Length: 131
Image (tube, rainbow, N blue to C red; front, side, top):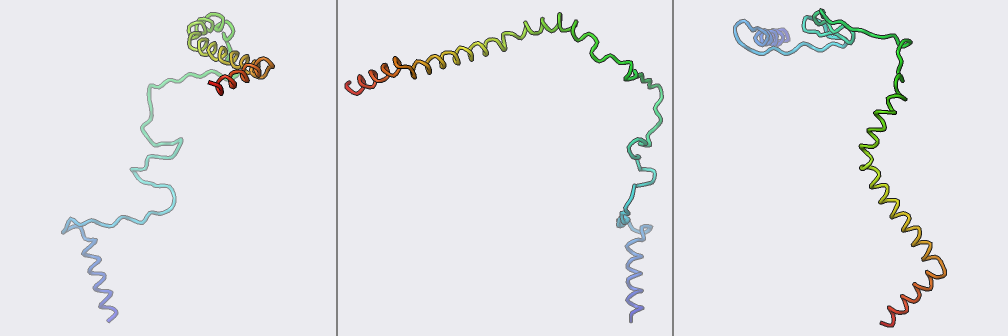
């Protein structure tokens, strides 16, 4: 009885896997751990496996020969001042408004905490209460 069950399973498996007579879909292979291989494998970092590049020329300068800050000071004298003057309207107007509000608030705060300011507030409260 056991051999007949195995034979039935084998014949069923043959019908599922046999693609010569039917267009049936086969199950995919079990994914193994490790890097993929084969013709469709593109490659890993550094060896992508693409076609060899031709006609590409690259140039480089040694880090010991580079001058990273060449022209920084002389470039700022002309270009930097021009850019600063062009952008001054965008930062001088808000800064001057902010400074004006700050100085007005500081003076008002000092006045309100002075003897004269206390007297003026007391008189204003007294006038509002009697009105």
